[in-house]
Image (cartoon, rainbow, N blue to C red):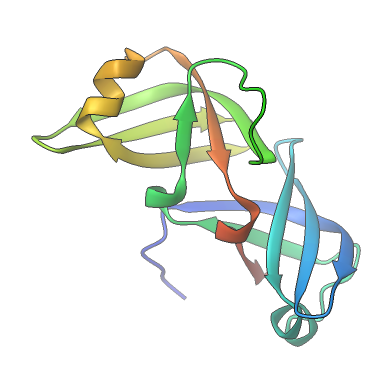
Length: 139
């Protein structure tokens, strides 16, 4: 299947914590990081997710926020450090490519945010992704 979602990180499910409506799924990415996905319980059951299931974490580029350093007091648990490998700035928005262990992420942020953060190719950033914005695909 071909998807328009640019961010596709391979990994393995390490834990599934079902709730009444949602399930919290912990994924160990091939790059060594851990990622949390909050998906519907029905989806977790349909995908038959258990520890050891090979998955691909999918995140739309518009759902990736960036920080230039550690952030405290934030509920976002998925924090992937990396370095900017590409930066295209348009009139309103900027597309930022980030090399992370095991792959690459793209973040689409406002041009103003890119300027305010002082982003440039080679700079270190932390990609921030809410667990509710992570989809999973079995592979």
